[in-house]
Length: 239
Image (cartoon, rainbow, N blue to C red):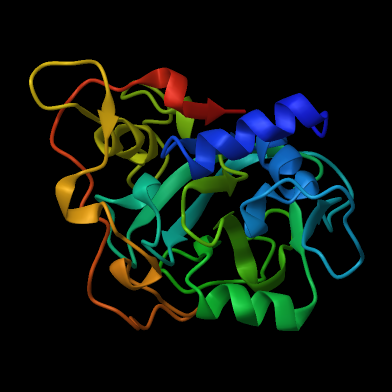
């Protein structure tokens, strides 16, 4: 993905075509090692000061459900969510532990880039292995780019079905994909062009609600998204 042609196309998708990218589990690993999260761009080299994902503290693969909390809504992927929403999500990984220098984490929290955290059943972020399956720092499960267009997360949101995990406590439907679809709208007049919702054409960081790791709101506005319209899947980079 660092090939010049591919790199340029990805940057064009995000910066000129109003596109989105989503990486789940191994996809999250790819995004973070490229720099697409938390920086929103592919970087040629990463350093020891950059966030990464590494081996679970338990020293083995974890395959289980865990509870995660929406910690920020600064992303179109989270447009219908509220800070504090809890979901029971399937996990299956051996290298899902999020690590970063504390000052980097502090900056991400301040900018609303921590999207999800592992919590106990009361919604409190936890470092206990009973709730945090890999030992991620600050209980971080998912993060975004600065503008929220790129989301990386460890939990398998896509493994939802109303007939799966019926004996597992908690809300298992997490509307990440639904929100990705709602982000796009068909151009006025019935054409096939893609436009942002009129309310968000000039949206910047102030257009999103920002929270710290304890869930305190620093802004009231959330990304509005668009009405129920078909998705233009080619505009989504799914890894």
